[in-house]
Length: 461
Image (tube, rainbow, N blue to C red; front, top):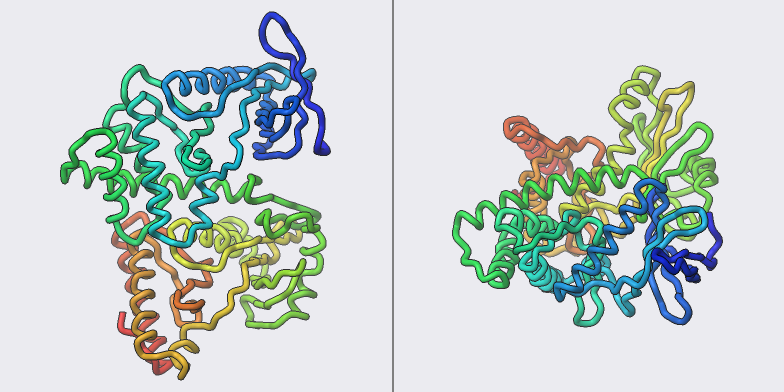
């Protein structure tokens, strides 16, 4: 890995062949084996340098982005100014463009904004910008919040390499499909917010909304959301800017970059059992062992799925470990706006080529399980009724997204503040058939009500 800062010498494309020097100070984004994006200085001017590492595809990628940035600015759309392009001594292609100062990605703005109304306002702003792009014949094929920068009153489009340009406005069907991609960023509990976005977009394009258009748009949102979730789930299983895949002798796993930071993942794996025994043991059973531990100055919950014989190891190895499934399902529910503890890492350990045991690490939440909440004298009847309503809404969300939990009970619903959080996600099933979903969801509800009656505090759902 190159030590920052460093000097990047670029031989400028063209007849002059002059060499320009960029002082690269920070990595903004890295796609292993493909490209690295640096923030740096060109003389005294702050710039962004995109270095395309692939010797065969790199020149074409660089040229495509260069032409698209110029076309965007020619059409009056806000985009970074392209400054120059060229090659390094080792034949990596480089594109240098202006750095948009005092900016923040729309994705970061959206993820840190707690107010749902402000989130909708942000998406309405982006929606208006998108309508302007479509009207001028620009279609972003990889549309997501991370491809917009917010700088004061500016909304700047990024990733020109995935934009398609046409001589006239983007047709209606393609426009609505693209808008649905943006709408997927708003994981609301209903469809009213989506209709609001459609209304804003159509007013910007001068279109009149019909019931058929509205219904078609909502179907597109559903379809695009499923595709987007599958894409995101594949991404969280490999190294990217949010996650890091790590492996060592006899083990492998995925880690949230914010959790592992500069710490040694190998040392954590080696000391995992010792940390769990020294921590606050929450559950000690035949199938799993759960403990609250402190590591690297942070309180986390570690769940170990125990070894249960060679046949069980073979079966889990073929279908994916329970820790890996829980990691993926945690990210799935988060993308759908259903509360669950944030997954921080999963680790799989192997012996004789077979999966031996596995670990799931999640954030530690301050709260209590649903049974303790409902039986607490400090909780009013009104709060209990509101909690029942929130749990009902959570279950409606699971149903709408064709998900059954598989082990729905009071112990697997954790109350944090006034919100229910779903726990124990390794048994979740995403159904493709309405019949199987109905059977499994009815079983979930039946099991949940039965547990409530047995505990003497049933909820009216």
